[in-house]
Image (cartoon, rainbow, N blue to C red; front, side, top):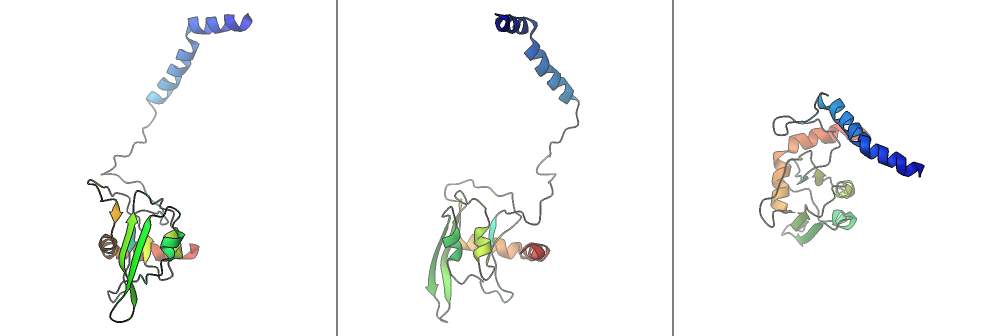
Length: 163
């Protein structure tokens, strides 16, 4: 009986509504923390894991030796590699695809690579507009690696004590 009376009084006096409005008014004039994204960027750690990139050696040769360790260690099964033996007798990848929708950006592929060929960059602003753009092909990954090689190299040096 007493609980029903208390509930009726709370309903009549609108105490829950007043408590909610108190929270609203308390935060109404508080400083805002919204970041205007394209113009402003929040700082990221050197160990941030974003878009993938395939690297080359300084002489322009691809680093990937098609060992397929990254494909084997990927928990999301997002990496697909096909390999061929070139005319010089060296095994290289003929296909290196990463499904960016499946990828969980865990960094296991980066850790498993014995020649530091696949890396996760700090790039976080990438999008897909058409069907099939979620597959990062070998050409795209090499282009990203070529374009951001200086940043990748700096990040590798900064992160060296943690490796």
